[in-house]
Length: 186
Image 1 (tube, rainbow, N blue to C red):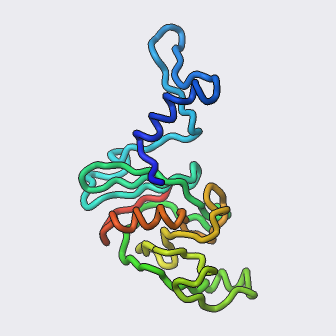
Image 2 (image 1 turned 90 degrees about the horizontal axis):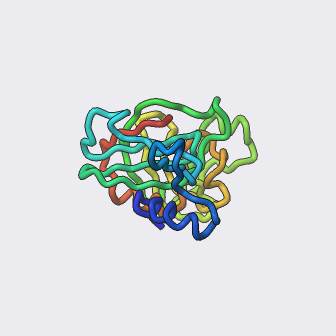
Image 3 (image 1 turned 45 degrees about the horizontal axis):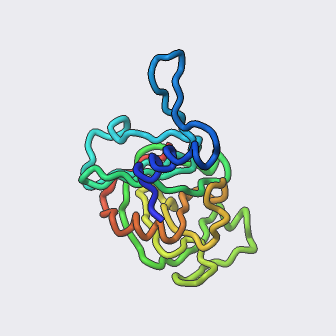
C-alpha cells in the first residue's frame, strides 16, 4: 500500500471516529491546532534540497520513515527499518548511483566479523536474501535502500546500516526513482 499525505489526512479526519479522540483541537481559542496522530513529523524537501531535480528522498532514521518526492512534486511516505545503532547509521547527503532488481547479497567485511556464521553470498531471488526484491545503491559504499522479506524488521532498528522497506514499497520507489536521485539520511 502506498502512503501519501491524502491517506494520512484521511486517517486524521477518521481518528475521532476510530479512537474517540479528536485529531484537531483548539489551543487557548487561537484557532485549530493539528495534532500529529502518527507520532512523527514529515519534512519539507525545501528544507534539505535546493530543487527537486529528478526527485529526492529523505529517510528519517529516528521516525523510521522514508519520504520520496518525484520530479513533479508528488510526495510518497513509507515506513522503514533503520540501522541497529548510531554507530551503524550514516547520516548526510548521498545519491542513487545504481538500481538492481532481485539483487544478490554478500555481507560486508564488518558484518562477517560480527556474524561469522552468515553465508558469504546469497543470490538474488533467494527467500533468505536480506535485500528483498529491489535495491537502490547509494554513493556510500555498502549502503542501500532495499526491500526485505522479513516484514518484522519494518518500524524497527534492525539493519546493519541500510534502510529497509516492505518489498511492495521498494518496488514502487524503485519504479519512480532514476539514477541520480538525491538522498538525505537524517
